[in-house]
Each structure stands twice: as C-alpha cells, then as structure tokens.
Length: 142
Image (cartoon, rainbow, N blue to C red; front, side, top):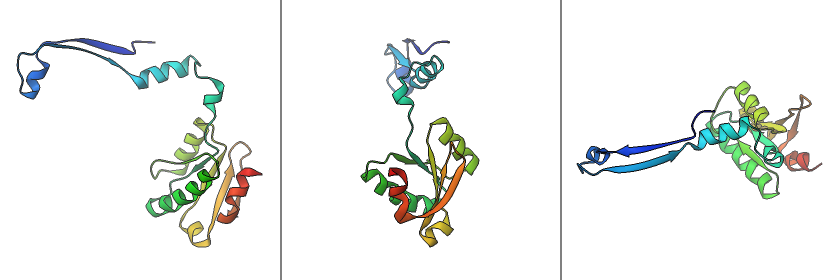
C-alpha cells in the first residue's frame, strides 16, 4: 500500500522565511492517499457509495449558471444533485457520473435554455427524454 503519512526533522526550514536557525519537526497525513487506500480495500460503508440523484452537465458558462438555478430548486425539494465542476466533454462527464453512481444526467445547452426544457438521461437504462423544466421536479419523484 505504501505510506499514508510522513514527517521528520527540519533543521532550518524557517530560514526560508527569514527566521534562521530555528529547528522544527512536523508530520503530515495524505488525505487523498488515505481515501485511495480505503477505496481499494472497500472500507467505505455501502450507504456512502450512493451518489447524487442527478448530475447537471456543465455545458458552458451561461448554461451552467442556468443549470445551477434549476438544480437549486430541486435541492430545495430534497432531491440530491450536483453540477459538474467545469465545462468538459460530455464523455468525461458521463464517466464521472458512472464513477459516482449517479442515476440521471441532466443536460441543458443553449437550445434547451431557449426552449425551457432539458434532456434527462437515465444512465443505467441508457434511455433519455426531453422534458420541460416545469416537469423536472416531478421526474425524480415519480
């Protein structure tokens, strides 16, 4: 597995900051490394493996702002969802959703913004449909 932490003695580390000749010691734990080890050993409880209900794809600056508002309305109704953190190719966003066990992808591009609708894709069934934004909340509660 390798180490998940490290540390040591640092004779003149403070000298880099203009305070010479002050010795010190320190330790550090790699949170990312600990997470990787726990994931590899399947140590996370099953209920923690459940992802958000829906991932809103990030299709650009204006589209993501628009999608964020839709997402917040769903969250206020208790529907868990998230917005992909940056504009990226759709394939990358689909892979992210699969890795996080997210059931639905919600895609709102400039055309959808104009028409006040969205594409919802059920990822496990590989089925998608276009619905109005007014129908979005009911889509996840049916």
